[in-house]
Length: 610
Image 1 (cartoon, rainbow, N blue to C red):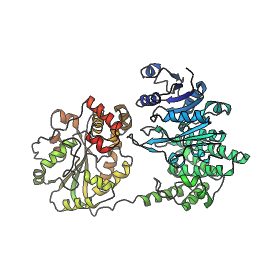
Image 2 (cartoon, helix red, strand yellow):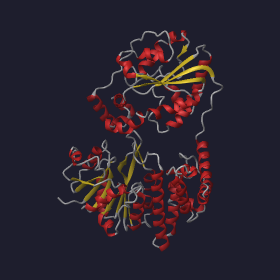
Image 3 (tube, helix red, strand yellow):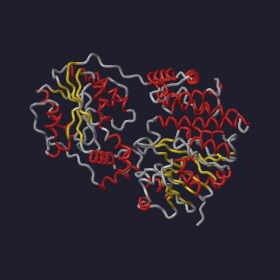
Image 4 (tube, helix red, strand yellow):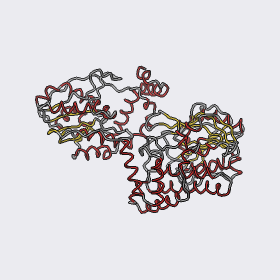
C-alpha cells in the first residue's frame, strides 16, 4: 500500500488523551495514510507503553533519546514522513468526524502547498467546543487561491496543526520548526510557510478540536521562562515579516499588520505586563527592554483600524479579560511600551478591567453574628448534612442557631436524582448574575432573628472548577461580611475516592462535562481538588480565620457525620439524625452508559431525561 498522507502525532505525557487522538485518525476511514508517533518523553515511556495501546498497523513510534521539545518532535516526524501531504496532531487533541478526510480530499484536489481547515477549541473541563475566533471570522468560506497576496487572511492562520502541507513544498523551501522554540513554535512556522506558499486553499469548516485541559500551554500561567519564549517568538516573527517587506517581496502592509498583531499579543495574550511592570524576576527588566525595542521599529495611525484584515479580527473596543481597550488606549499603550513605562501600562489595564467588572455593592455594617460557612466540597456528605439542617431547623433555632431559608434551593427544586439538595445554591446563583437582592433579603432574615449563630451550606460554594474562581470567591466573601465573624467549614475525604465519586455524579447527572472518561476527568481536576491550600486560602484570607476541617472518611465509618458537624458548629444538644432520601451513586456499567449518552446527545433536557 502506498502512503499519501502522513500524520505526525507528538507525545509527551498525554496518557488520558492519546487513545482518543489515535481513534480520531483511525475513524477517518483513510487507506493511504501513516501515523507517526514521536515519543518526546523516553525517560518515562518506552515501547512497551505504546504496545499497550490499540495502534493501527500503519502507525509507527519513534523515540527520542531525550526530551527535545515540541518543535524538535515535529521535525523528527517530518524527517521520516513519506506521504505526499503531511499534517500534525498533538496527543491531547483530536480530529472531528471525517474532518481530516475532507481536508485531505481538498488537498488532493487542489494540490495546494497549504490546505487550511477551521478548528474547534474545547472549553476547560468540558467537551463543549467553540470555533476559534480567527477561524470563525476569516476562514468560514471555502477558498482555492494563489499566494499570500491573493489570500491575505492566511497571515492569521492560528497554528500549524490546522493545515495540511505538501511535503515537497516544505522540503524544497527548507521549512521546519525552530528547535530553539520549545514552546510557542506555531506562529513562526505559519508565517514562514504562508509567505513561501504559491497556492493556499481553505476547507471552510472544522477538521479538528484543540483541547483546553489542565496543564496545557493554553491554560498554564506563564513564568519567566515562558515569557522569554514568547518574546523570543514575536521577535522572530517581526524580523521575518520585516525582512520580506524591506526586500519588496511583500507589500509593507503585511509587516504593519504583524506589528499591530504583536502589540495585541502583548496586551491580550501574554500576561507579561504585570511581570515587566514590577520586574521581580531578574529577567523581567530585560524582557521589557526587548519589547520596547521591538515596538519602536515602526508606528501606525488611525488608518490601521481600517485595514481590511485587522478590522475583522481586532479586539479593540470589545469586551475582553483586559476590559474595553479603545483606539486611544492602543496609541497610549504603544507609546508607553516604547518609552519603557511598564507600570503606566499596567495601571491603565488595571483600570480598564475594573471598569468592565464592577463589584456588587458591599453590604452595610456587619451584624454581630457568627456565620459558619459550610463550603460543601462535592461528594463529602453535603446533601446529607443539608437534609439534617432543614429537618432540624426549629430545634436548632431554639439553641440560637439559624439556618436561613433565603437562598435555599428546596421549594420547586427538581434534582436529576431523587434526594438531591444543593443547599443555599440560590445565593451563589444570584451573585453570578450580578444581583444582590437575595443577599439583602438574607441580611433582613438574619437581622430579624435573635439567633447569634448562622449556618449557610452550599454544595458548590467552594467553586473548585470555576475558571474565574478568584473573582467569584471575592464577590461571595464580600457579601458574606453581612456578619462580623465568619468561620469556613469543610469536610474532606480521600482525594482518589472524592474525585472518582465526583466524576460519577457528573456523568450520572447528564452534564455535558460528563462525557469525559475518568482518566480525562482526573487530569483536569486532580491538580485543583488535591491542592487544599489553594482551595481554602481565599476563604480563610477573606474570613480572617482558619477553616475548620472535618474528616469525612472517619465520620462516615462510624456513622457520626452529623454529630461531628454539629460539634464543629458549636451545637451542644445534637438532634438525632433523620433518615434522608436514598442518593445512590451509579455503578460502573451504568456510569459508562451515561457517559456515552453525554457524549452523543447535545440537547441538555434530553440527556437529563435519558
